Image (cartoon, rainbow, N blue to C red; front, side):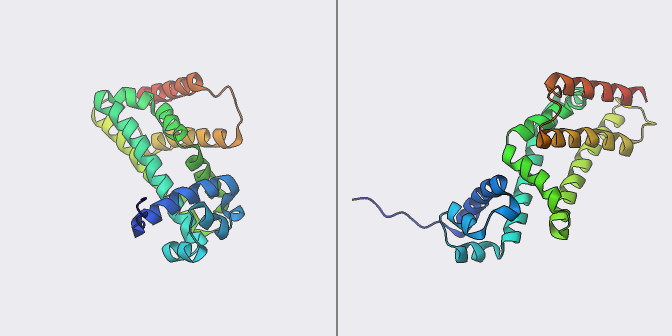
Length: 203
């Protein structure tokens, strides 16, 4: 006799809803995915969806928060692993590690980019701004460590250098979103990173 399936605990149900909602939002966008579709994707009713998240917007924000945290964890992990062996190598491959972290979750990265189209909403704008601030802080910390080890000049403006890296990272995002610049391949990205680091060390 088949045993009855046990009911999911609240946190397990919530985690499942987030995963399935991520897929639905990635496929149909925030405006395109209805609450009915979001509920059905997780095998639940709309009242259960509202019980866990309160509204479609709150669910969307929870999904964006989850994606942003997961992406930063992947990116930090790759960069810190390199930095532990050779900080110069880390800085010389930062763009490629960012690209690798992004390619591990296409849906997530596209959702973060699509969120920029919702920037007229202050709550959604705060999510993307917080993500960018955390990215800035991480890259700034790497450059600060490199400067303390005399890998970079003591005269270098770390804020300017950090924004330079971020401008390249954002370019990678938009390239993926728009599917343009096919020549923007791994070799090109590595060369851009090498030249940028070279200019920072010369400065």
